Length: 145
Image (cartoon, rainbow, N blue to C red; front, side, top):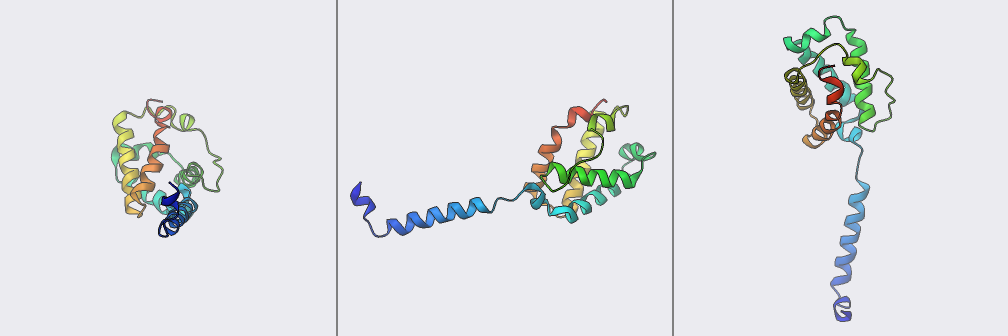
């Protein structure tokens, strides 16, 4: 084993691997940063609102809504759950969706629209999947409430 460590090429190789590993650890960014920060989240939310308006089965849930409040709170919520600098000040998902009786199909349509909005906004596949995983935890607070 001593002979292996004295080989002249081994020390630079090990040092190089160690530096690469440490550099990779420092580049880990929050989901908020991966999404593109607040400007990208706002763009995605704006696109989602347009898609909601174009989808009759979803649009019906927004007919009596304050769209500016919805936009502001959804943007704030996404910032919050993606480890951004925001504190969410809106209602819980269960309270927000209470009495809507959203079906599985409508929920899935909403997810598809979210994916389309993220895609249209240029959000990376990795960031999309991470955000969707966090939002998926809220499914039981939204469906059939």
